[in-house]
Image 1 (tube, rainbow, N blue to C red):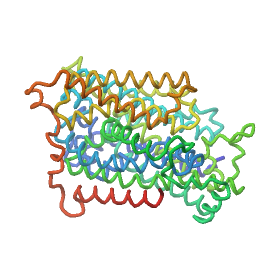
Image 2 (cartoon, helix red, strand yellow):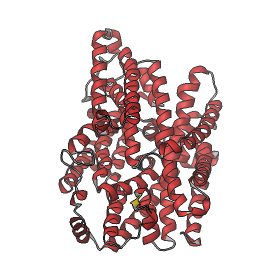
Image 3 (tube, rainbow, N blue to C red):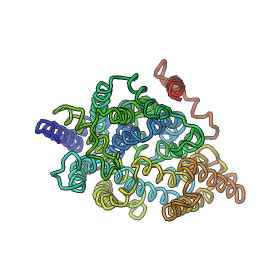
Image 4 (cartoon, one colour):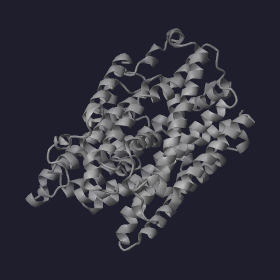
Length: 554
């Protein structure tokens, strides 16, 4: 399906990325990249947090690249084909959560100088909370960030390179390439390669969107085709109650913040880029830059799937290769668009963009796993471990994580919609973590006992509901939309933590020593940079822009 020209483009890209990552892992490359903030060889701060030298453009692009994995390229195109622009809410709603990260969470993390998010939970609650979040973060990184990314990457490469002999050969090859520079180079290698990969990703996505747009003829033919197909609702982002998708507007409004606060403000894989910022202003502006970038996925990742639906309905896109016994499997719609609409050379560029998305997410997750294993778990039992030893343990942990994630592929492949599969899992993991972070940062009355019990009970409740719904999918509980389920679980966790805190309140000394904002207005008192670069101005512009977009596509 791909020509030799395409293959050469892909190989050139892979060689370039690996070379950049390995260069960043050498002492000389690290010194040049850090330019004055050079950690010593074997320094765990340099390996896990890039020496605290990251500037806002790198932070913003690294956040975006780690978030946008091959799962997004493949599954958002699939959702665009199946349900239209609806799942674009996961991209645009993220902008609101990133504003929260910039205004309230990022300055707090920089101020307290934490190295990992479990580290914060120990300071705010107790060691048990740190251990629990570390384990939970590792599980989510292996499953969500790496496992699903490998699955979608394997599906795409297995489709485009049938000579590989199946998706597992492709997955193992990707794992070997990504693991090589990530394990050697640490966070600096991750963010440098992610910066390059963000550019490649956006260019590749633009190329495929433009090709589909030109093939269809623009917006008017799209609207006319959807009207003829009786599918005009596919252009709407906000659906009414009873919508067949199971995601009416109120489910998104109530449920997304639960997932978003966990993902963007309390997940080590994502927030680690912010923890490596030079200072508070760079951390805040980097998060807001990422919020701006999150506008584009609806047009670059979701819209191609909707355009493919219109082209297929008009007979201008052959999807017979995805049809078995009269049933069309939309998981490989994005791959089919690449093959059917792009010329040789450009196909290679877009596949390179997909690999960029996959590798950046896997690399970020591996680095966070290394940090969690070394700094939160291993160092607890070996407090005298040298910096060099911590880095070595982190590298071994990353290698083990690669193997574990590959072993999960058969379980993750059972979901018909990859995007819904990812978010269904998140909806049952996120509520207790979102709860303890929100109450922990904003409410001095939250006690260590309440935080510990909420994490335990909330996680058990989420796992129990997930297992029940998986085993008995026809029961009424299983029919509750996963976004609403996330909201219900959060309400239960908040009520539980507040009740425990009041039943056994903190002492005056504990309240005084609580590591949290004394007032929600405290983080907004920082003056920030002057002019348009000020974080308050940028936040207002992001919120205004998102309001305009939702007005247009409501």
